Amino acid sequence: MRHASLRCIVLATPALFAFALTGCGQSQSPSAAANDAVAQTTPTGDVAAAQATADAKAAELAAQEKDLAEREAALKQQEIETELARRDAETAAAQAASAKQAAASQQAAAKKASASKAATASTAATTPKAAPPPTPILVPAGTQLAIEVITPLSTKTNVVGDSVDARLASDLMVGDRRAAKAGASVHGTVTQVVSGSHKIGGVPTLGVTFDSLVANGESVSINAPFTKAAKSDTGKDTAKIVGGAAAGAVIGHQVSDKNGAVVGGLLGGGAGTAAAYGTGGEAKLAAGKVITVATQSSFEARP
Image (tube, rainbow, N blue to C red; front, side, top):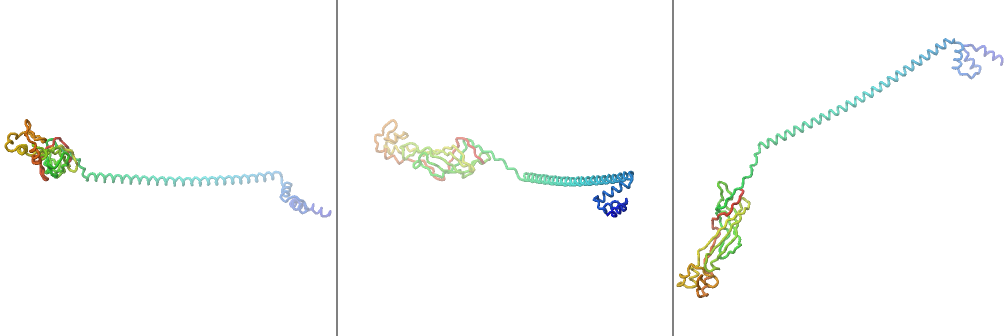
């Protein structure tokens, strides 16, 4: 045992100090032993130089790492800026395309509007303007109308209020303008009836007032009276009542239709009065008869 210890001491040279410690069963690590060995064998100046060298390398390594980090950061920033520039360029291109499309649409719309305006102007130029409506024709009072009677009339059969249909027998002209065409409908009403069959003596009379005219499809109001009178039958009725000898004395006098009395004297008999009824004359207007009437007031007709 003693020989072994001595052997370990002999073998513990500076170069193999760490190994010897290990071989001798020491627990110190090889690196720590090496450092201790170097510290024991290396001069103090060399240690400081080695430390400075190590520090310099560490500083250089730190500087390299810093430079690398800065380069990586710069590269990353450049990539970000490049991406942003790309996005800005895409946005600008999209906006430019949209503006170009909008401008094209506006130009197309303007061109279409111009073409439409030109077409409208051309149509307006080629289409004749509608003529203004003609002014109404004033038919003055006193204008004569030639009227053809359609409804046959008679003082024996008609009464006041009966309707009368007729039509214009010729054009109604006012100057060189035609107010109504021939054949235009005319309407009237019976306003007076004096029948020789129902009245002893007097003048059989038929009165009609035409109150409307259809001028060019439009009904207008008119006022055109007409009177038809037959010959007086007073003398005939008187002769039938008193006989031929007495007729001359009373001709021209009005005979009452009640009792045969003559104005200013009495005939003296009522029997002849009844005989005189139904024997007088009548005023008539046959269908197709053309009469002339004059308007009592003016009216307007559209041509």
